[in-house]
Image (cartoon, rainbow, N blue to C red; front, top):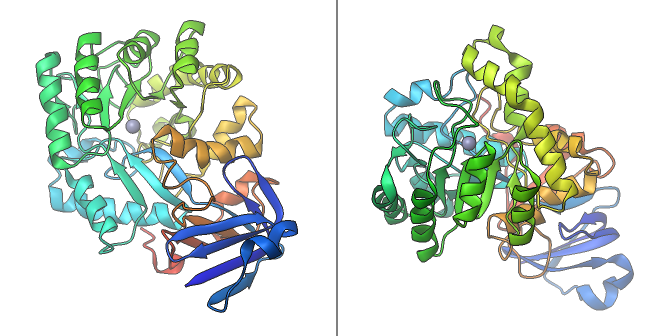
Length: 407
Ligand SMILES: [Zn+2]
C-alpha cells in the first residue's frame, strides 16, 4: 500500500523545506520525497497508490524528546510517591504518559530513568503493537552513587566495579541507553547540582561497559567539573549542563557531543513556585541555577554544539503531552524556528543514535510524520495546540488521536 501526499509544505528534518513538495509512503517506510517541480519523474505514481492533496498543509517528521521520565507524573514532588510504588502501578502510569506523548506529535522518546525495569517492558509492549505509544529508547534504572541525585528511583552503585555491574544489569534487562548521574541535581533533597558525584573512574567504567554492548551512555551533568569528568570519560550526551566554560564547550564541539538542555523543567518549576506545593528546596535550586543553564545553552549553540530537544517531562508541572513547550524555551538561544525544529527531529535522532531509523523524511526511513494545518516555521507555538495535528503517523500506522487518555 502506497500513499502519496502532494502539494504541501514538506519540512524534511534534514534542513530542507520543499514548498510545495510531495511525500510517498509505502507501508511502514518513507519511499520518496521531493519538490513538486521534480514530481512526475520521481514519484511514479502507480495504480495502488492513494493520493492525498495537502495543499495549504505542512508535513514534518514526528518529533523526538531525548529526555523524559514516563514514570513521573509532573506532580509537585514527583519522586516522593515512587519510593513506595509497585511495578504494576508504575506500568499503568507509563502507558498513560506514553500515549499522551504520542498524541502530542512525539513519535520517539528517550526514557532516562524509570522504576526498576518497568519502562523496558512498556517499550516491548509498544514494539509488539500491544499498546499504543511512541518509540521508546529506555535506560531502565538510572545509575547513581549512594545518596546521589535520583537515588529514589535509581540503582545505587559505588566504585568502578559496582558501576560496571549496575550497567550490566540494565543491559541484561534490555536497556537501549545507560544513564549515569555525574552530578547532583534539582529534585533530590540534600544534593547540589554544582557538586560532582561520580568520579572519572566510575564514569569511565560505566561508559566502557555500555560501549562494549554497543549502546550509548547519557550523563545527568549540571556542574562544570562533573560535565568535564563525563566528557573526559567518553560520554555520548550531556543532559542539562550549566555554567559551561570554553573548555567544556570546545570538548563538546570537537567530539560532537550534543547538549540536551531541558530548559522546560526549570521554567515549569519557577512558574508554579512554592505556592503550588513544590518543595522549597526544588524551587530554590531552580531559581539559583536558571540563568546559568540558559547562558550555557546560548554559549553552546553559538559555538556550534548540537542542541537536541529534551524536556525532563515528569518533573514538577512539566507534563507528558506538553513536550513541545521546550520548543519555545529553546528560542532564548537565538535559534530560529527551523533550527529549533531540527533540534526536535533530525538532530535529535543523530544525538541519540537513531538517525538511520527516524527523525527525517528521507527514503528508507520509518514513516514517522505529522500532517499539520499550520506551518510551525511561521509560528512554532502551533505545535503546542492539539488542533494543529491533523494526522500523526508512527511506523506507517496512523494514530487515532482522539482515543487517547486525558488524565
Ligand atoms: Zn531527567
